[in-house]
Length: 320
Ligand code: NDP
Ligand code: OXD
Image 1: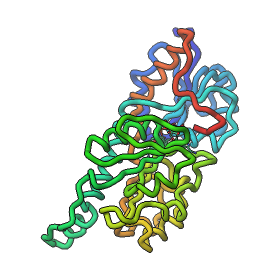
Image 2: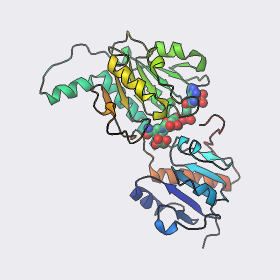
Image 3: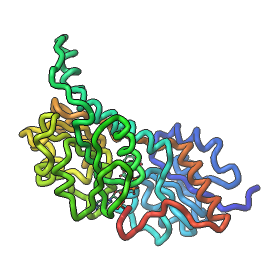
Image 4: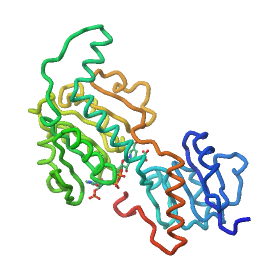
């Protein structure tokens, strides 16, 4: 019998992935899985750690003995904006698998737009054999990445390997080899050089609604892709969807690839579903691998037990 206090799990993920990962996770401590209806009324006051994704708001009132809260994903807006949270460390999920997946999505979408993917898919549906003569190379196209954190920093490197000209923007100045970087004060200069804009920002008070008509209007219009393209895999709350839709209709934006939306699932009546210049993926750019998540939580708990500081702790003031 373990003398360790329990970890409580409340993850609104595909149930089977949680059940399966729990079979081998946390071997040395009790687990209270809130996805199991048998635990609905369990006393949670003994729980020491919580691992959550969009949890039941009651959890934080019931689990009064927590030492730290682990987010089931890289983003923490799902708890920071929606709950009255106890004053405890909140730890983001940072993991190679999640980072690789996000960079795959970003590179995939940039290449898709570079190589006329939308036009060729449409031609195939109509059985049209026609080579589009104007085919720029990656080096002719500047990809501007907003957010140079764990995900953005990896994406810019991989885009660079593919040959794109890559620039990046973040709140504080950054130095990344081979990449021109911009900070909060130089946003307009960054936008004016950007052909494909990639959103990898967290959702905070400062980034809510940042992708609006005014911002899209500042992107470079003279690039080789016939107009600016917008990719967003950060958070939907950062895009003003009404303005985004109008910009896609009137040519302010040439095309978009969107993984995140103001409201998820994207409502069936959203025009974005059927716009010919829009690619929709269902918040699937970089899903958390639950086994990797539990390994990350175990590693952080081991640090606490060894008297070391937790890593990837959220700054509650800046909101990420
Ligand atoms: P990080 O916290 O590592 O990085 C955030 C980056 O955004 C930093 O570079 C930060 O700047 C920058 N930033 C934050 N606020 C501002 C601001 N106001 N102005 C300019 N730059 C700002 O986060 P990650 O890279 O790990 O993740 C980014 C986001 O991606 C997550 O918060 C989540 O919302 C989203 N995500 C989406 C997934 C999906 O499947 N679609 C999967 C995983 C994550 P600075 O460096 O100066 O601090
Ligand atoms: C995350 C996400 O934040 O999947 O990890 O959106």
